Image (tube, rainbow, N blue to C red; front, side, top):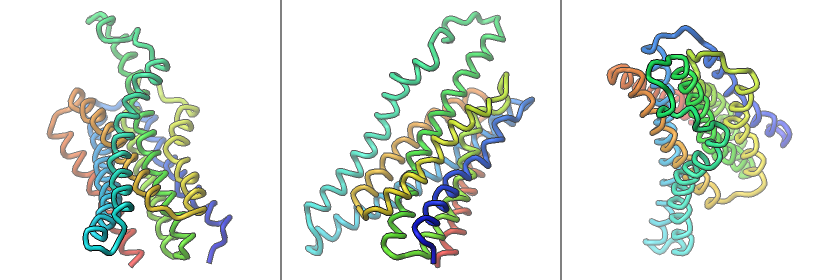
Length: 282
């Protein structure tokens, strides 16, 4: 049996294991093939997270709709759950588009756009690439952070429902997942002109892992299917957006066969980790 403060401590640990995967970002002198593979590996992990997120959100919303159709549940609750799911997807996708166009462009000015770089200046091309990599890493951290917030909600809501064993299993499993998610953030940053600073890695680590702790706190305060579905769907929409960015980047820097092998291995890592969590809780 764990008390409330131990729960919060374990929730924080589950979120901040993301820092274990971030040092990969400081690897340098990587060939484009190896860098492309790491990027694809990260993309595979994100694809798994999309599948995982939507499976849980849709299961909860579809159960409400099925119960309403059979007369066992409220039609109003079913409609609200479905609106939360589709609305969350829209917020995740469109919200990140807005964030990228309105906020990120201020942090990464467009004076380094490809149109302004002379084709013969290799150094400026590298500078442009580095700026894009930092931007992509932050976008990935935001998408993963949205997902991890929903994971924190699941931990907190398991605890408040009295399912202490399940809460502990979720903490262990999410902690393992977050380590691989650190690789997802680090992928675009490997082999850059200069190593990412510890300050930047700390920032993306907090953005990606911190929401697990926040979600644990909020989830332990009340139990809400609507909030659970909404934040899962927001996370799924955000991860779709980020995955598209990573795929476009990968196609430019590596061959299709390397990209697909990396995605396959990343998917396997995600599913095997999830299987271990499931078997541990059975």
